[in-house]
Amino acid sequence: MSERIRPVVQVATATEAIEGGGFTVRRPFSTVDLSVTDPFLLLDEMGPVEYGPGEAKGAPDHPHRGFETVTYVLDGAMEHRDSTGGGGVIRAGDTQWMTAGAGLVHSEMPLADMLRDGGRMHGLQLWVNLPRAEKLTPPRYQLLRGDELTVVRDDDAGTTLRIIAGRVGEHEGPGKTHSPITYAHASLRAGARLDVPWEPEFNALVYVLSGVARVAGEAVGAGQLAVLGAGDRVAVDAGTDVEAVLLGGKPLREPIAWYGPFVMNTRAEIVEAVDDYEAGRLGRIAPLNA
Image 1 (tube, one colour):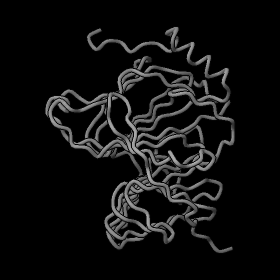
Image 2 (cartoon, rainbow, N blue to C red; image 1 turned 180 degrees about the vertical axis):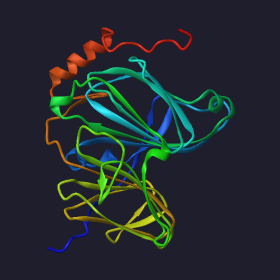
Image 3 (cartoon, rainbow, N blue to C red; image 1 turned 60 degrees about the vertical axis):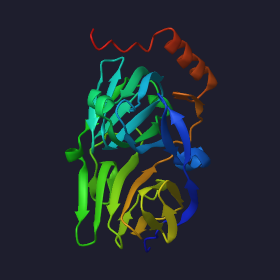
Image 4 (cartoon, helix red, strand yellow; image 1 turned 180 degrees about the horizontal axis):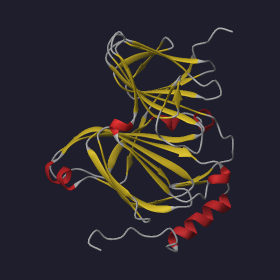
């Protein structure tokens, strides 16, 4: 049987929202049904933005339970801290994979020099749902430095693929996942074509960060998400230089109860999560001078 390029079934334009301490994000999943993106819950593009001195913003202490946050920094740097003592600084090219699981309190803030001097910030945060059986798994961090990602470069074709997690053909990224997924960042020179195999059981999403691409022949611009149908391959042609994210996963097809930073399976579990947070059972982030 011949392999089939996945067709585009929907192109969605990201909406803007205010998050954290007042920074703007572009949110491409906002007009797409969650059944289409499952197991992915949310994708936020932070920036690109040029902050002046004193303008940089972050996300102060806030809780999570029941899913994973994957933060991929393209420009700038952020410091993550949490109530388990985890976290660290992630810089351009790095990925921090945080499995919130049973729950924690978390913060994502700009570094002191960014606050003082300003600078460019650009990144992505992806929320990946956890299967019912692993909702209350102990919290875990994976820090994936930029030089640890699996890079597939074809200089003649003008394409570079950085695989954060999952497989693309024979190549596998370093991220360890609870739900079977693929997460990759593609860079294409103008006129280039990226044509890669894709797991038939996975869904497939292409989010364009910059430039103008044709995904399976459909025009998709910066801030737009292409939702793909069934097939064996994903094909992207670059009308200009293009930066894009490729996402796919095996749908969980489980009930979702979602309230702010908590994603569980039932309303009773959400009530329990809120109660645990308000009672301090998710812990608190220690002061920096403690």
